[in-house]
Image (cartoon, rainbow, N blue to C red; front, side, top):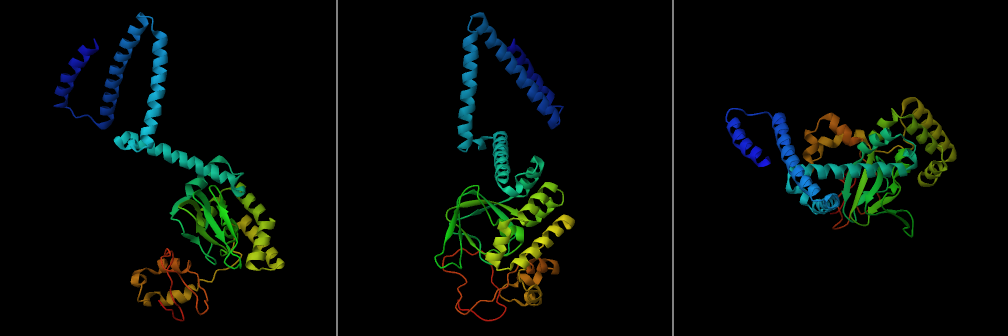
Length: 338
């Protein structure tokens, strides 16, 4: 019977296509209907035959084993690159992988005390803000005195935190799921450590503007941030790393809490000297980097706000041969030898 239906439907479908071109939605319905009809006919034929011969147990066991085997092999093939064999499997595989990575990001956020008490929708919103950045071995994530604009979470690899001012160069080795840069991130102060990757590393990065955006709508995050501001870690960090007095630390914490409650923002504890006005006056005169000449004033101000202005002593080495380039240097005064 199934063969008769197929034989009749094929020429009928061919003739119909000569004068009717259905839309994609109708075409998808017809394909699904035809496939379902053929599958139903096949199943009825196999199940009916097995039932008549008393092989129902074998049919059930074989169907379960075959389904599990197909699922297992299909997953192996997909993970080995076989998901590219057709658009549907590619879409399903990529969607599953992205969903898995997203859930892992949410789990990593839950490990951080600052985000532990957030609701599930709030952690999901925070996970959507995370940027993914990949670094080769030996790359510098940030240097001492760099402005703190992000919070970092290790997804893969390792990061070494070095203290450039210490004589013995003590270090802290961070691994997967560890977070770093949090104290500088919360206080808005320049980094006092050097963060370097010790192997190929992938980081989840939370930019400060996105964190402040969630502060506007999350009472739980405001409460957790306020508790962190009042912790000993913040006070010790500002005193030991930035050499603020206890009185200065108390004044800033009081200011930060009031600003957090009223305006939903945290003022920086240490102002970074970016010498923005001086840069704006010279930006269009920099001959060796003429791209500044064509930028509008708003873009130049965005760049100026991210500059780090430093006074360096004679003999300072900006970079070493074969070192990865991660910044642009502009000389305001003085000279250098290349």
